[in-house]
Image (cartoon, rainbow, N blue to C red):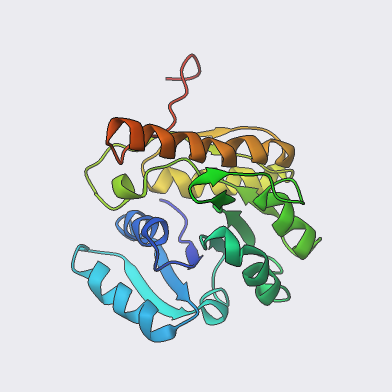
Length: 217
């Protein structure tokens, strides 16, 4: 039997966060959607519950959402990334942080001063919590559709135990997951999202994702 887990999604009212919440809640994971505005979080939760037959969804402020969570997903726009992580510093001890943020300017990727969003979060948190990068290249539209096939998820970070835990969380949403190496690789994985955005625009799609071939299945 799968171990029960609690996941908080900081910035969970956006398309990625809400889609991830649906996919996690469907197999029974307790999901707490966080927002700067508690009422906005609760409104999104009520809307999402219409698509669920099981699972626990809750809405809270970002700070309240992380309190009882084992895993904390950061899913805010990059412009608010550093501020959001800094505001949560001190509350994340003993938790695993999953950073899904992509540095973009008008849909184009760039490398921030820290080297990547993941490394930026790790610099802010220090030894308080391991930060693992994941879910950057998956289609938010596909996440929101329970029957849609998902692309593969590349997982990177310097804490091997934390990476394995995150890969187990990703298994719950029905996606293949691959250990894509250390945190130093995050800027490449984050940057791929800009390529996928360009592909979607060029080919009038919303479903571009990453598929790994030649490994495993």
